[in-house]
Length: 111
Image 1 (cartoon, rainbow, N blue to C red):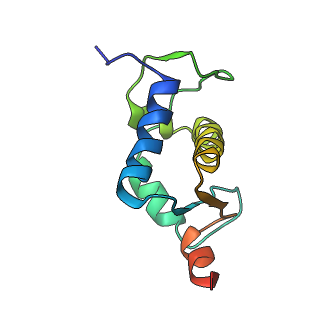
Image 2: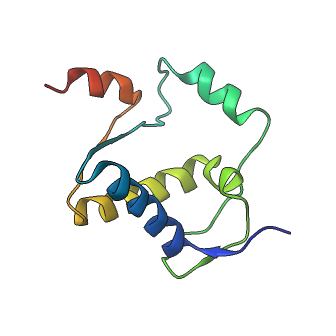
């Protein structure tokens, strides 16, 4: 049986982790576009043969009934979660960047 938790709780935990460890940080998320990128092999290795659970459009109060890893292995779910987390981090004073493909390239370009 999977531990049930609300989307709101997961977002808040990630936000608090960033705040407590790094303060008002600059956060850069990897993009996961359909275009080829330098980390495709790494993404495939991590996912293995797993296909994440398809979650309908979600709201903050919804209860997740899957493991976090399974939920985030679905491309659409991960993108929506990242967008919601980005908004939450920005509201708390963090600077957020979403790379189109590999975040390492965006980090390298930052002055």
